[in-house]
Amino acid sequence: MEIKAIGCEPLSLKRVGIQDGHTLKVYQDTGGYVQLKKAFGMSPDEIIQHVKDSALRGRGGAGFPTGMKWSFVPKDSPKPKYIVCNADESEPGSFKDRYLLEYDPHALIEGMIIAGWALKASTGYIYFRGEYNYLIHIMDRALAEARDAGLLGKNIFGSGFDMDIHTHTGAGAYICGEETALLSSLEGFRGHPRMKPPFPAVEGLYACPTVVNNVETLTSIPQILEMGGIAWRDLGTEKSGGTKLWSISGHVKKPGVYELPMGYADMEKFIMEDCGGMLRDNKLKAVIPGGSSVYIMNAGQILGKNVTLDYEGIVEAGSMLGTGGMMVMDETVDVVETTKNLSEFYKHESCGWCTPCREGTDWLVKIFNRISVGEGRPEDAQLLLDICDNIEGKSFCPLGDAAAWPVQSAIKQFPDDFKKWLTKKANGNGIEANI
Amino acid sequence: MAAATPTSYTDKVIVSDEVAEFSPEIIAEMNEHLAKYPPERKRSALIPILMLIIQRERGWVDNAGVNFLAKFLDLEVTDIWETATFYSMFNLRPVGRHHIQICKTLSCKIMGEPEITEHICSKLGIHPGETTEDGKFTVSLVECLGSCGTAPMMQIGYDFHEDLTIETVDQILDSLR
Ligand SMILES: Cc1cc2nc3c(=O)[nH]c(=O)nc-3n(C[C@H](O)[C@H](O)[C@H](O)COP(=O)(O)O)c2cc1C
Ligand code: SF4
Ligand code: FES
Image (cartoon, rainbow over all chains, first blue to last red; front, side, top):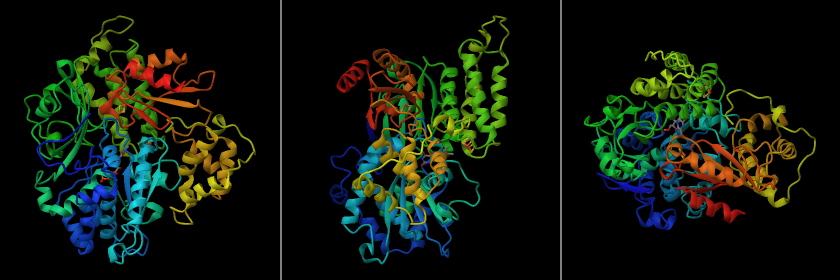
């Protein structure tokens, strides 16, 4: 596994892979908690302005501008406020947060305290996916070190500001990465999403104003204060500021976590050179660039197309940046099978709250099951699309869309893979599938 | 499990009135979790205590443990089951001493998961979802565990085993026998 910054200094990866990077000593020896001290000399508005200037967009997948989210928190609310870090990382293809949590827990803690100061939130929770149990232990130790050093608790750095942060475990449910489902889970309930509005910034945890941010988002905050918002933004592009972590898996020679400046050119160079090229020198067939919940791309959308790695570049090329969890597939894969695999994932993870997603994902899997045993019918591609149409935009939360997009894009970009299965129909009438 | 089709909890749960007992040290550990949340929000400690303490101590989420937790958190027993039946990591039936969870999602699938699963199952003589007769091993197929770059992978208990090959799987299983 590679851990590497390309085209920029390692910022998020600064301590990842470093001996004892997770300890307070190494963190402070490498510039840690200096920005926190600085933050206490700044007004909350100044801090929020830096975050706005930075053009930082949430790294959890939705890409919402962080500074704007922070500015939605009502200043005059008499209720307590909360900072919640989303460390649920369960999107297939994403594994970047894991390395930040393992090697640089203090960067997250520092980011959360700065966020707490800027938003007047005195309590923070870090919600870990239950399977990341070893990371909870690392974080608990880091939090204890921070408390002992007076970095958490009462009157931090003599600022008069109090804050504490706690770890919280999930118990296995992808939907709990969705911020409102996460809050339901944090309150001890089933992980069903909640109606928005009210947005968490206004009514979140315990119906109090709450900012939910991803691990990578919050660890970027000290970097932004160190450089200044505009300088940090200028590492990337005007609309996609800063640097971004990419998790690369599948058929490349050097899978891993890579830090790239936003706007990095281009996807082909990244896969074919930076990631060592295709495993066994096979041909590239497909890429899912942003975690499983985005459109699958065929090689023709990438090779020779100069797809820049930022929010806009990937949309232009026909997909989405998502979490930056890039899954690369070579010519040996059958896209019907890979799509079936993802449909099974969404069926398993559908929380069951709303009918289009609960029933729709079940039907997608049923149809893929018959296709995969050679009993697909010529009209099945259209049937899959019809079902997707009844899920997309009609579900209660974005998981429904996320279940539909991989199927829709697979049929669109890889019609031959579907034709192969659907005309090979077991009862052999050889009718050409209509795709 | 984020179950697609809601299943009545009575299908899954063996009902009894027995209430589990825990030592003062374990109760103190539970109180540490409780202290993280506002006093009127005890329910927030439900998942952490059930998962990190009760399931660890009892081996699975059994009725006696749930009955205890309901009292401890001032909740109804049904509140606990309502939550417990949602999440895939709660074992509502006993599992083997070593719970082998093999990731079956895309990156692992294309990097060799099927061979790994086949090998483990034939070596243990069970199918996914089953437990060996001596109660030592349970094999489950699970969704992405955040190790796609080091696929194929599995988690045994909470331990990650990554970049698996048939040889390393053999070594790992032999070390657990
Ligand atoms: C089904 C689903 C799963 C999600 N999983 C995660 C996750 O594991 N981690 C994460 O940070 N955000 C996840 N999100 C996005 C969150 O809802 C939310 O947008 C994010 O945590 C906000 O933080 P950010 O603005 O810093 O990205 C998920 C969203 C959906 C719809
Ligand atoms: S879209 Fe799916 S995951 Fe979201 S609320 Fe509906 S059933 Fe639950
Ligand atoms: S796909 Fe197996 S760990 Fe992500």
